[in-house]
Image 1 (cartoon, rainbow, N blue to C red):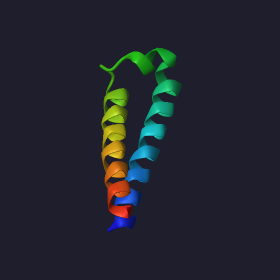
Image 2 (cartoon, rainbow, N blue to C red; image 1 turned 60 degrees about the vertical axis):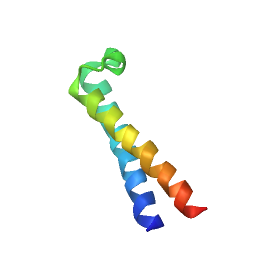
Image 3 (spheres, helix red, strand yellow; image 1 turned 90 degrees about the vertical axis):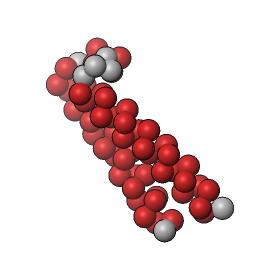
Image 4 (cartoon, rainbow, N blue to C red; image 1 turned 45 degrees about the horizontal axis):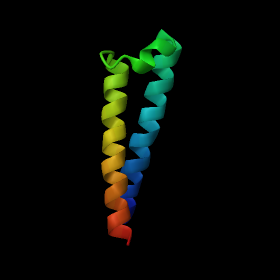
Length: 62
């Protein structure tokens, strides 16, 4: 169970980084502070899932 939660946390973190870099490359740095763009909305959502799943992993592991 720990491995599944940890793997999903790392996957969400990776998706967040990829989406952020893709948004910067396509729209420039101004998109980082614009939560109305779809890139950043999904990136923030994936980061929230990362935080929740990594916290769950820490609770399960200890």
